Amino acid sequence: MAKTKTTYTGEDVISFIDSYVDSEQKKIDSLQLIDLLKQWSGFEPKMWGPTIIGFGNYHYKYASGHEGDAPILGFSPRKDKFSLYVFSDTEKSRATLESLGNYKMGKACIYMKKLSDINIEALETLCLESIAFVKERYEVS
Image 1 (cartoon, rainbow, N blue to C red):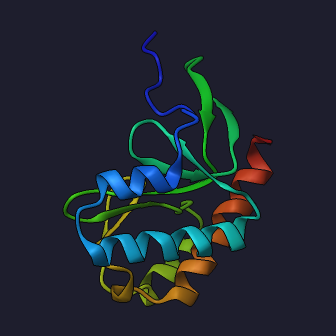
Image 2: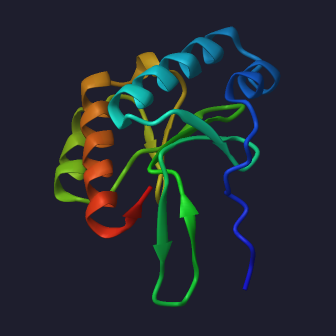
């Protein structure tokens, strides 16, 4: 079975932002996202894999037998866009996407160019819904 790449690394979050993010606006947005996700989740930011900043963690196990740990919420300040790992496929989350703003949806994440492109209240709703979804279904630590 393949080893999961997205695991807690212990690397310093601020050092990662300083060394990886090349746009001043993206650094500002990253720091603001850290503050928001920390406030909403109640967890400190930690590095998961080489480029994901995660908040909290849970243990998952699929019917296939694959299992591992993942952050409850997270984001990555990729070169072109931010990847937000804050979505759970619930009715409330799908309805909230209508008011989120300018973004693209991937299979399990939301892509945005800058924080000012999205509605922060809608983002908070998505994050809180995702936290509730994870807590209902998985072992959270």
